[in-house]
Length: 418
Image (cartoon, rainbow, N blue to C red):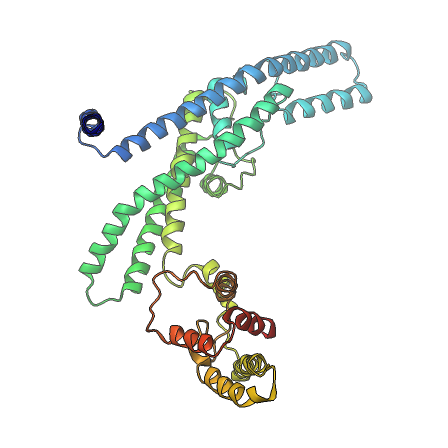
């Protein structure tokens, strides 16, 4: 029997050693495949590739569902225009003209060009669909082109439900990685400016970052759009960059929609990549800005309701209520002989009132967090991990137990009086 147990223990120990050796072997292979680069960086790189593939998948899906519908609408619009021009050579009927204009406006709202014999490529080509997929998952949503078929609308719902969380996850990961060199640069800036306080160093740091974002994310791309887009001036280009990167997406200015645009598909893909990079750096600037103490307005507003001081009378009332509750609890007796003993118990407990586990400081309001801890302590008073038996609170509890007072009932009655 002993030999069998010994053999089993040896077998278990051998399996553990083999498991550790296998883990080391796999880790060595991963390190060789990563070429010395951190594994988390490779995970982020593959996640970016997966995200780009997800955008390409969305482009293929939207093109598959929407391109036949758009082709049918374009054919119907061309037929209506030919019928109107052939039937009204001498005079024009107002009713027929109004009906034709209504059909043209409806087709234009659906993204179909009303120009006859136009050379513009369809709205749901791969480049156009890739741009549309990016505007969906980034919540920009220009609205100049929308799905027309029922299948395309359902695909858009499921695609957005998956793509929007993926986009936010990617932005959060990129911002977290970019914060590492920014924090190092802030430390170097603090060393270069030894006479400045840390708050001033943070302000200088975020100011320089804001200038960099303004120049490289807004101004230079606006100049590029001004040079490429035929009908845009610099203000229109800057307006488009701001409206797009703030995810407002009004849709009055959309790049690549001009007639006879050269390299339209490539231009749309580059514009979408610019929006992704611009959103990342804009979120980085916001993250650095709100990390400065005193600049996060949300934190200030959430703590503002605890900043006002409570009058001392309120705390005096609380203390008097606690003392009254203790006296009323102690003064219960079963006969006249216990009156003197009860008075001694009341004076002892009232002297230890300030050393109870939950105390109320003067001038500070009672927070809900303390109330939650109080309730939790009332429900399970016996669970006190790492309790110091020599603490004043423990001495007070021992005094109440020696006086014959139920500590749980005492806390409950005190809490009800509060």
